[in-house]
Length: 609
Image (cartoon, rainbow, N blue to C red; front, side, top):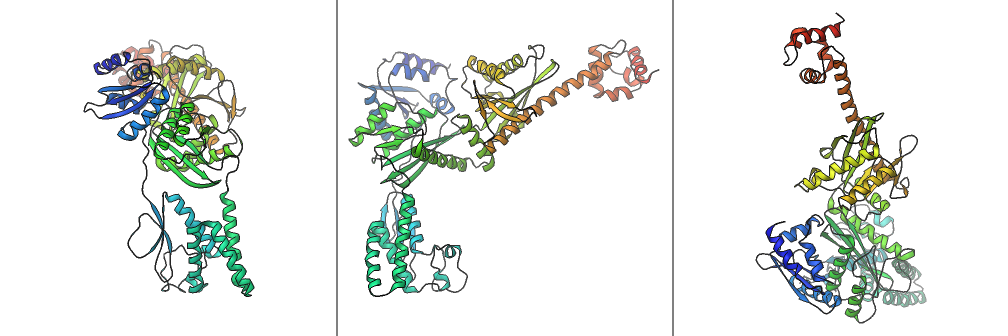
């Protein structure tokens, strides 16, 4: 522990055990982190105690702390209010910060002869007509997609009337989503009328638009213009069908927000689906750098999100636990002056919405990492199957190999991002465990591995990097041994055993007292099978190498006057047993440590002289 950390710990131990807010500062006096605590003494002193339990981001923050201040409050709830206010004011570097996109979005209608309707981020002085502003791009995209499909407007960059008749209609025409003005399928007058109807729809909403079209349809029918009336009828049906598709939720709460979190070792994606009047009206996602506990991360993200957003619904659904549930509900309820409930759905439609949100978060995180889709899909399936909360990007696997209890060795392999990471493979010669005791051997290997972790100064490579998941080639006994070792080292790493069937193929994964079938998850099953085959291959290969060396040496030690040391000298010089056999007396005798008598005895042994 550095002198500075020791001084800060001494100061922290003098804090009162009262609720409040703590403010971390760097050497320049800049605020770099703000947090709240039920007990200031207990919470702040944790930062300056053992550094082994902190994630990388916290370690970086602590290394930059020069001093800290604190503000006492009467309750933990007041501390929460003050924390949110101060974070918004100071935007500290190491707090979770979501960007508040205050830009506006518009729907633009061009002044061309054949008008186009497009999305625009900014309103320009270009003579075009603008509808808006909208506060988010999602609303604009959804509205435009609906209008184009209902009124069969073009969504291409062709210039009209220049390009009319110069090409075949695109796919949108054949699936009834475009009236194909490019091929002269619709007159200019009828197309412009469709654009006017689309503008009315975008401005007034579906209910007003339908009411107007129904009145016009009746007038056209009375005038016996049945073809035009039929077109309006089809548009009304399309609007009603679109509205029906949008009603994706039901239940007691017509307004709700749904949140889900997806994590890997370095980043997290926080996805939000927002519903109003039983319809999805907004979708957002935020990528943040963080490897902290999921419950703590959800809490920080929820606080940040509703610090920026004032429109808080009566119901909020989450995909997992968070800290300070009661405090957050109290804070949100106070902000809007009515009750706000936070829930973790377990079944039904609410769970379906959370799972949909979770998939959005996972997909966005996949895009962020840029890794192969197939591998990431397998890792996501494995994470869901094992319920470990984050994508296991760095997996270690272990296997023991021996011959009838002798010459025991172990192999450790690493799969990084779903593929073998051979530069991190390790071999272990079992030294203490006796008689082919696989459980004792596994304990020995893991103790040696995590002792190396404690001694390592490089947290990104080799033994200095902890895995996101450990898979053992063995059953419950090996698993229990591993759990004991992790507990001794105070390490929170998910560990499971890989179980084979009678044909030595992967059958299931065993947890602490239970088994998980993986055959239903194809990608995860393939990945675990690869890991089990690879770790077995690696351990067996090492065992063969070690054993073959002993066989060669044992052959040489059968020769009169040749002990283990001289056998080692011969193998070190000639490399192979066959080279020893082919050597003449002079070559054998030229090796330091091998006498002329030894050389003659070796030659005679192999040549039956």
